[in-house]
Image (cartoon, rainbow, N blue to C red):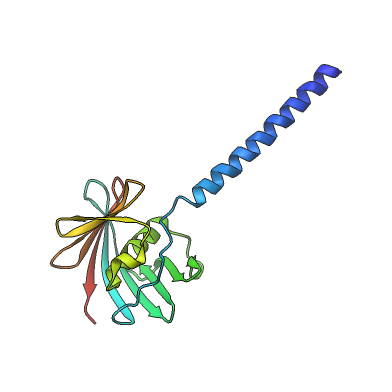
Length: 177
């Protein structure tokens, strides 16, 4: 009887540690996203439209979409739709940070894109993410945190390229109203 009781106690102790480990991993996953912007940039116009192409690491087009960016007060709203108009991502950035807008499933890749676009809207791009190191490149710059490159932007004759190393590359083409 004592051996059985000791075995039950050991199993409960292991369960407690596995729950703590899972909780720690969950917290680490929640904090591993893009850094929070220090300030919300003021767009020159209150809205902007973009044709967006997402490419994989090999350069193949994964999806083409339309992106509307709208500023109202202290918030910037991003609505990305597929060519048929169905929402791909809807996010709002406020002083409290990012949050979903509506019932569209969270889209981490699009949220990374929206975060990387913020310095493009600012007249002082360093003020958006002052906690990041910026390194000038040919035609653009890279944003780094603790020596890890988060993303690089390059200005092209048609718009911008935003590259997330080892992940995807996005082409942004402004649409004139």
